[in-house]
Length: 302
Ligand SMILES: NC(=O)c1ccc[n+]([C@@H]2O[C@H](COP(=O)([O-])OP(=O)(O)OC[C@H]3O[C@@H](n4cnc5c(N)ncnc54)[C@H](O)[C@@H]3O)[C@@H](O)[C@H]2O)c1
Image 1 (cartoon, rainbow, N blue to C red):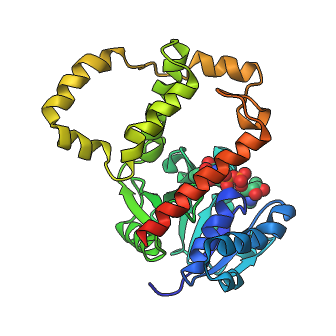
Image 2 (image 1 turned 90 degrees about the vertical axis):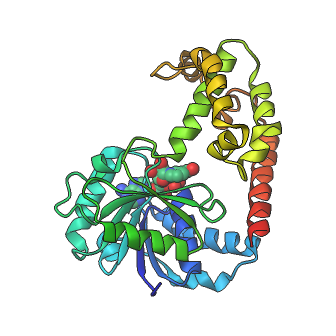
């Protein structure tokens, strides 16, 4: 794909990593943030990541932090927003951005779960608007879900898929704009049952995670659930569903256990306790373990 001008809104956890991927793919990147401190450290964070990964550190020279939103997006072929997960903020940002960009500039949100339709509905030209949902860390997890709304043009979707594929990502096309898209729907279906198992006293939190990590979690990266269904037979899948589904958690709202934990200040790592207790050392050990695992998986794919 020809070199494109990419503008990124939000230089936080996702924004700086997305900038890194596009810069490494040879594109010119501008990036902005409402907070100067985030913008000031953005290039340093990219350099550290590139160095740790053994990638070309000079790629960072293609990233230009810009304090002003208009200056960040004015020349862009493609704008991706990675600001906080707040619908009103995202709507406001795209309303402003639309006033600065060309009519054919593609506009995308990296929202985790908010329907793209809700974010983009106020735009004058909605055929160039879509969603691109990356996963953290963006430079190690391959998937990008490309979400179209009822207004998105096939040309905008195709161009965006090619942009991400050429940058080494694994883009998939999500054809209907549903909350959570595909990945987070699947992930949270699992989390709902995981929380419920603890809430019902069937096992403790450590056991839930051990069961997953030591069983189907091991296979998931190479054997998706529908591969697995075909492997064991759709007839066995149906038989299992008949027995298990009536007992699986199906309530539409969040778990009362989760709400109770939050009321008690058990917010997870940031408060030192969630489902488990977290010392700073345990937190650091987990983060290192996850990064090492993702790095090795990436190396194995090269
Ligand atoms: N963290 C993840 O695992 C993950 C994964 C996929 C998608 N997302 C989504 O990506 C988006 C960003 O998440 P994150 O984890 O990078 O958050 P973050 O808090 O690390 O970064 C958000 C950045 O946006 C900046 N910001 C705030 N208001 C702004 C404004 N008006 N204009 C420009 N910048 C502004 C903040 O200063 C911050 O640097 C969210 O919608 C989130 O749901 C996050």
